[in-house]
Length: 201
Image (cartoon, rainbow, N blue to C red; front, side):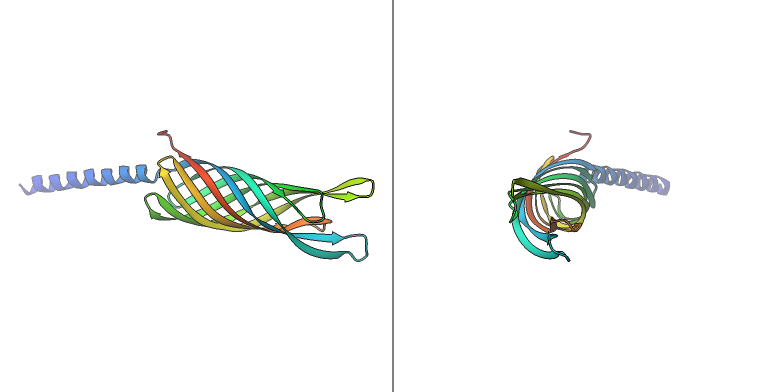
């Protein structure tokens, strides 16, 4: 009799453990991600007057808008994106100015509910900028390719199983060279639509 009771208890425990494992796998299964992001903010700029010796530096700021395409994936506690971004800015003392970046974003996810999480993380990569200035006889272009690093934080809300929205803020510092015009710091607020998919979709 005791043997039968023990056998039944062990079998029941195994079934419960198996159900728990399946639930965990389904609930927090790794997901592939595609995100489309729009952002707005400001940039700190550095101008170096190289017509005098030694060169004289000055700073200014400008508003900027951007659109990004991000590809990545997430597990229960971590997320990784490869992000390509195009910036359109109205830099002072230029006739045209733009920038584009390619980099990685790594986030730690704090699960605050089944369909809601808070995230914070690091970003880094490379950024290409192009500043055109009016000069006598035409225009001159100042281009630069630099590295950047920064941080971000925000919230992610699932609308349905495979679609969510994200709201966040991001800071980037650009390790710029001593060019005539260069980006120094970038401050961004953004919203994104995030498509989530697993092998089930």
